[in-house]
Image (tube, rainbow over all chains, first blue to last red; front, side, top):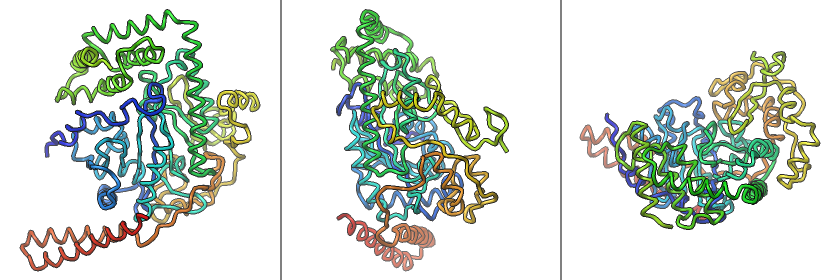
Length: 358
Length: 180
């Protein structure tokens, strides 16, 4: 069967997710906050051992419960095996799927709210992965909403749980609470100040970890990083939240200090970089994603310094996300070669920058 | 038996993940080398550096590695047949029952990752018959219904439909009863 492009995905490309809206606290520095909870059904083998048929059964049980509970507004449900390769990759860029969800797609799926605030991946590494993603720095709200969904599901589903370990997950790093909080942070100050290595070391000492934009094993893109908590045992849910907030507040302070220091020392260079970034984005004929992301980062920083007044955080968020390789192809509506992508990306960015002011 | 990548003498029992200039580096190490590497600097100095950056009291930071413990050999999960050795190699459990099968070894293993193996979250108690039992029944009835319709056995199909409707109501009732 030929996998045609999915209808609900066509709707997605037209409307950016709510978490890109540039609202919430410190939206320029903290793009979004995510709380993810991992759960498994006791009776079914975990996904390193599951067969496609077993995964399908888990998927229909979870979907049925979600439909019946009605917790998620205007839900969209997608079965991974019914999507084209391009659409699956589109979901990854959209943070609605992961590599674990799309590799060997049979029996896996995602259930999410139309505004993409809530998503539930079914048969990723664990049977159930609940995520709530909100714009800006919003840990309390995201935490509350994710736990609420988990609680409702846990009342009707038989979650794998055992004393003294807590919730049983496929990977022992999640055992216990199975909760992970994370933020997507733009930290050019830390990078320019060459503090990334020491930040990463310090984070690991306080049970947090830093990764690239797409999570585990991904590249540095546009000075944007995912910082997440790794605490799941020996602490309560609320303690994890409080500790995470302490850590992120410290990173925010660190980035602020770095930015002040840089601006004092390198004012001319920063101004030059900002203007050049804008000039390139407005005039380039070919733009690869990594280069575009670097210039967007310079614009974000320029915005924070008050050097750029014409564009909002929301616009810069959208530029970054819609410049991703698969997003560009979905915008054009067909598969493109890398060079064609660079061409369309350059033209998309140019148009968006000239049409949108703020 | 895989040897530690650092000393190349002792058995590698720890998956050590490090980020060097933004790139993730994974090493298979023994506990002794992992401890050395994780500390890098003398203990006190490193902690002071962290305190300065994060403003968190050293007492609240638990030790990452405990002294090596004796491990039971030849443990195997009767449900999914995962062995302890294979689990250590992949770092993934095969099913929920692995946790029981590996119970004794797991305490030390989790302690090395998390500093403790004890859950401190809110208690978890499901309130009634797991809804998946009802849904499972419903799914099998739906399959039967499809067959009945295909073979034009409409009398049976009608009965099945009634039964599915009942189950649907049961699911809704169970779930709405809990939205307190």
